[in-house]
Image (cartoon, rainbow, N blue to C red; front, side, top):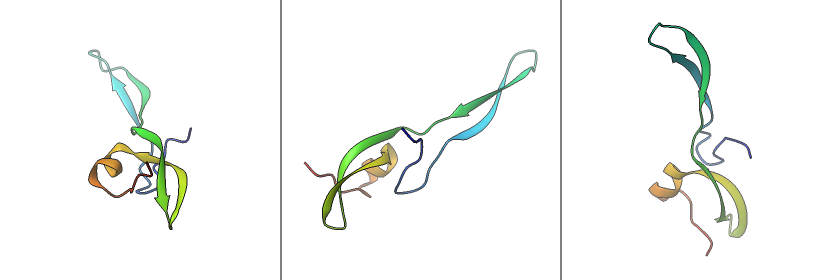
Length: 63
């Protein structure tokens, strides 16, 4: 599954793990993406949406 929200375009971020001795290794932060049935342009579609968009009401779920 793609780690990108289809509503707000929130995606994966990259950075470093920093140990106590200050060694750095690459790591990533992934948004909490859910595949939901939503009403888009009057029809039901399955879209990938972050939980922030679900919670804030930017997506109308099809139940």
